[in-house]
Length: 241
Image (cartoon, rainbow, N blue to C red; front, side, top):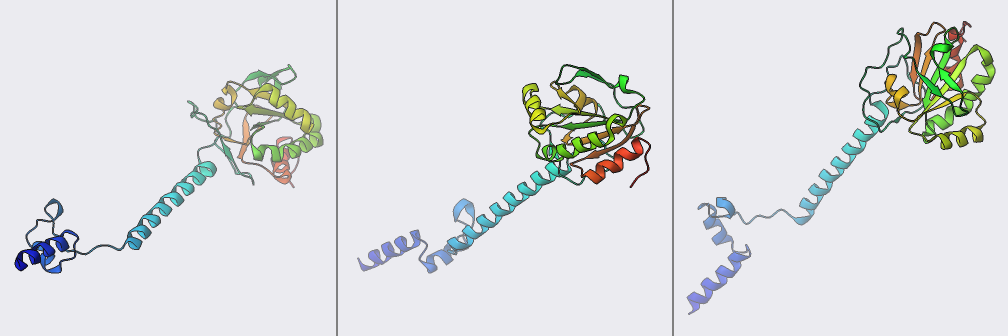
């Protein structure tokens, strides 16, 4: 009877992994879980929890890094330089055609500005054009808009500025222009036709077009007033700073 009780006690202890003798004996027989050995050794809970936390943190930080990289360094219009400010990526499919390069002819387009006047790039041959892609919801675009207005007033008829708003509604853009007092030509690209022709993936994107209709330079990201003048002056035949 005592032997039976002792065997029962050992079975109970073994069931909860507390019988070193029986656990050691079984280790060599391969009858542990899924044919593996049972050693009776357990990883402390705090160690397993720490490992899970470390892996989760690494995955989260990696995702944040990739997202940040994509927003700031993803494919944008072919550019000859970077502006001093950030870039807001567009949530559109990639344009089917390649972006035109510096030295190539600027893609022609015709549109209607927010005041109902026709805008045709071909008709502007003989005058330098600053083509600017932006949006009312783009922080960088809103930041540089007053500086673009100042450049427009500074150079007057020597330069035509056309702001193309993407993923915006005409009424929203009209209210925005009135509120900021912008006087340069503003177009709403409701079908993304113009931005696709120029391969624009991120805004603000600047295209400086010479009087002969060829692309002189492009810049991606918000620009400072000095950067703007550095691009505009050679375009209109003035010496640089």
